[in-house]
Length: 318
Image 1 (cartoon, rainbow, N blue to C red):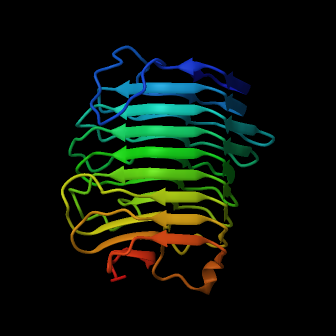
Image 2: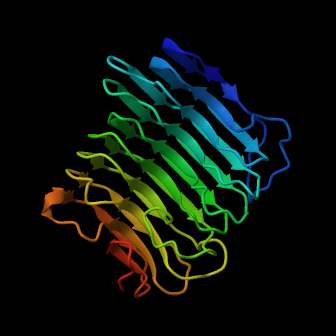
């Protein structure tokens, strides 16, 4: 479903994709054979937008192409623009190709202009996966936001986001990459995993992250519940980083992180492994103006592997 240039666009209460099957296990999937391929809802060129109450299910591709269940592509928003992506269900977004190098994301806002008010709330995104090829570049993500204006991301449920590619290229639950003064609150994120066979993934790009903050300033990160668990897929190797929350750089100033639960009891890997509740930049100082209060942390008990926080992307024994 696509939307053309307009002042106001409303997309509500649609069933998109084959609804009768619930996927389980690992791709590739040969059933359902008739469904939606690559894109569920794609929008470009509108000032105000409402996407609500839609169920997007079993979107499958068999070729190496970008896949998004809900995508805001270009020329979205502007002064007075109200953008709402609320109360949608995404269940089953899978690239069956073993050679794909393209991204796969449940909801992506890649355009939201200054002057807009943006809300991504009360959505359920689950079962977003790549097949087991060798690529390094796909980074399956539940929700990605990269508009130029800050957004509210709240009350979303994101789970079962898997990167099965052996290249170990990264996987995220919620990925916030640009736009100042966002509010990210009351989200539930769990069951995020990837294949560790490639190793060399001690990085804020290539690791496993429940919530990843990679752009903007002045964000409020409140009352989120993130839980990572289970053995990483694939063959045990070295240099792996997983975290319930990561803040990627010292340029992300003025963040207010309060009243969250960050839990990580993942396992897997050989040496230089950190499965931690949080990850912060190594050279951070008081100039980041970081408020960090009243959070709860839970980690595993393996010495040198599990911990509450790791600083930076060079392994330090925990």
